[in-house]
Image (cartoon, rainbow, N blue to C red; front, side, top):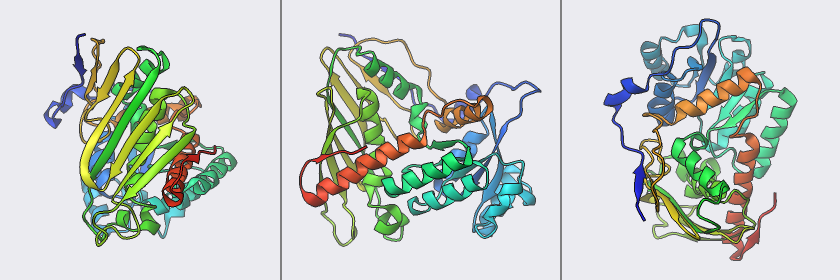
Length: 360
């Protein structure tokens, strides 16, 4: 059988080929304020917003004056649209800001999402949605009460190779799905990072990286897993205090498929593989925002046009269209809740050293 690799690495030098289409003069762009100006906002979201068709960067929130000044110089944001955490609620009266994008450490997701919704703003919240399923339920309750829309930063819901994966799984293109393997990890050797603090990060790599492995498996299976078995490993307890260095977990699905995954804060890995009755697919790299996804399959498929240098362009444009057209959000808060319910079960399986039936 022929093999085809779809998806090519594209340098930022090719950026001009990915400029968005011009909007009609009667269309207004959705204004987005980024809350938290760390690495992800700086290197991914802000540049992506320069390429979106339906969005624009209209505000920022930061506790670091030097960062605010730098961003103003780079993106031309006026003083009146720059906020601190002390005057965060003033965004409620800013009609240039339609969406508040929460790009803060995990333990702050629920608080700032709820506050933004109560201010009458739509919200994008980075993953994981909250520290646990209970936080997610509170966020969803706030969304319902506000009547506003909530998107979780699942950029891969809109990434073309992951979309093709999902379509092939739904169509049972190669027959019944049998086995999946997904792994994601990187070296997190900074003890000062909030990710290394269990109370702030929520429990290590399983929180920051586990959602990717879970998402890929359940979207390929087009089902929710029923049971999970999980194991935690720690070879450097002096560095990884109160959290596991590596977490492996096995999900079982109603259709009989099984998925084995590993997340790590001490090794680089980034791949997804699915084996069906008559064929297979693999994505490697699969999840990293800084690399283009490469999809390889057991047969020749139609070429897939890549998303350009920033996967978040399609994610944010999709949310803008949801707001403009009042349509359903695909990467919804309900999806975020599901993933935290699974992660809660993974943590419980490690603690109790047994298979856990997942409750939804």
